[in-house]
Amino acid sequence: MRNHNITNEYIKKYMLSKNNNRKVGGLVLDMVIRWNSSYLLLDRLDKHKDVVHSICAFPNSIIGLTDQQIKRSKELILNEHEWELICCLKNVLEPFFNATEALS
Image 1 (cartoon, rainbow, N blue to C red):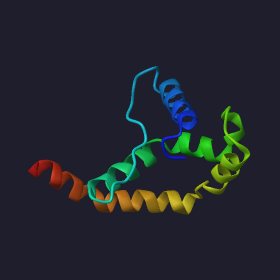
Image 2: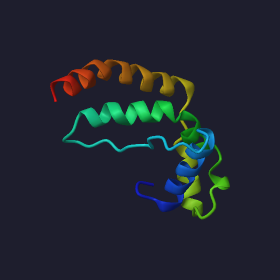
Image 3: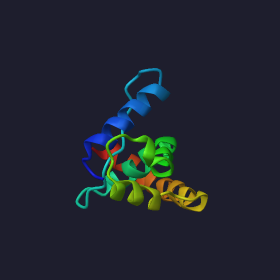
């Protein structure tokens, strides 16, 4: 559901409500030519685990999704082991991200 206005709005509202109406960085996409984006994607995914879980576990609460989008969202739910893998990958990539930032 990349660039999907309905889910993007849901994410923005969810994050604002959880952060006392303070803007926080949203989810990001991975870019093939920018390997640091993999770290950023995993970092944001980990930070916003609750909104990702909400979208996947309760897609019916998002008004405007089609039946196919609801079905697909439910298929994307991550289990605890997968969340642990995300954290591990993030931890592996973090020193490289920091080094790149320091050299930039």
